[in-house]
Length: 274
Image (spheres, rainbow, N blue to C red):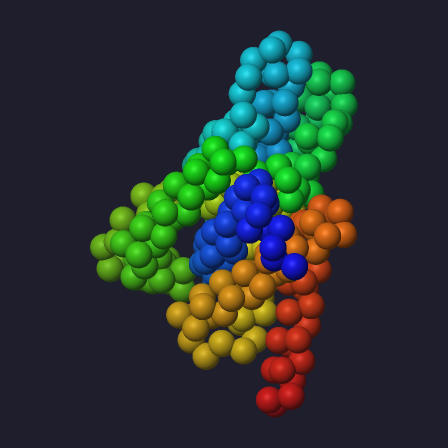
């Protein structure tokens, strides 16, 4: 079954990219869920869609060759910075920054798609993921993002852990909460933009939250929760890619449904333990 993924280069890059995404998406998702900011992934995914739409529009209407994955990353990072800035503006209602940026992302997407005269096959692949869309350049970019994320998490794990559970106490303890928050949300933006090739813009938030939700039911500590989240994410991504190729369907949907199935199993195990 895996022979094709070892034989054909484009499938090999897709498979390796999926493994990387299966690590970094649930890894960051663990911190996001614990911080009760799950909707940030949805907001940034829609901003990423705006960036992708801009890249496709620029090439179709004006002949500017802009890789949608790069334009998606730029828009996603800018959106993440705006979210963090708005959180400081609305200190008593910080969660309002998320629907503001989400709305902006949807609005820009509609405008760019309309200017480009509607949807096309490329945009469909970005929305729901594709087994054949990953190029060697995409693999190198995503590998760089994955390495950057892992290094930052390793360097600032204690700070992120402290801030995830009690941001006020972390501030009192002298941590640079403002800048670490900014760094973290930029990492989230990069991971979301990097995941679009495999999972799709509209489904990437599920990969960052469903494996974490499943691991929360059975994990006995934070580090174990991270490990199980990555394990569940990898199972969902690998199964989604393989089934997507052999069934000729977008892998994003299968990845999400596999993650949901794992979540239901975890909930069942929790009830059996009780």
